[in-house]
Length: 250
Image (cartoon, rainbow, N blue to C red; front, side, top):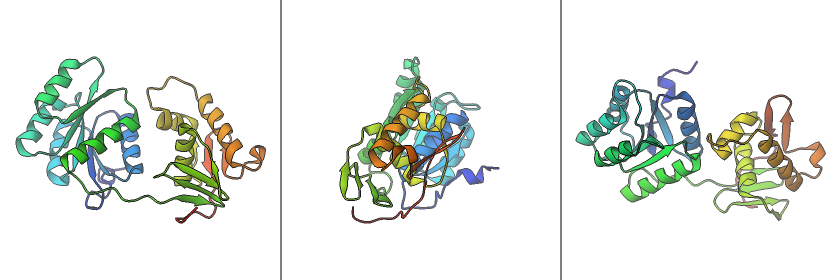
């Protein structure tokens, strides 16, 4: 079972920008935490306003992602109290139809806001932009290529190579392959892949994932019908079969 102590991910690691995520909705916390960790951030979590203030004091984060609708103290009051003591950047999460909350949040000192429902990639991009603008946090670590049995994916250049030849992938195909290759042998459900790649506000079906996996297999597999890289786990989802992973040249 995950404890509160487990929810703090190496916040003492000064090599990674540290983000405190404050929200009382578990699925949003998990979505934000997962996406930030995948991009090299160290993440801690608070689920109430009072816990958020304690975490800011103890963890000294480089940025706070702060929901407005919180138990005990709402996000507006938390933002006000943080600003009375600290200049840590704050990105607020607000409901789409609560314009007044967004205005008040900015007036209380928030640096930016994202409306729910939101795209995980947009949230990460906003956080990166705030950290660049404010000069907060350490630089994110370089990420080298992911490799397995002649297949190489380069996150920085958005390139995929198969045995020395380039593979032309769409943006969604690239994101799917990157996620699977970063976690070899881990099984991902279709629902998780749909939420992570397309966003939790996407209204399509899990059939969308199946179609993209099928097209991806056609591009990287010698025999798509007998897949060696991306394997189907019946009744669950998909996994990337581990081969010779590592860093190096294509």
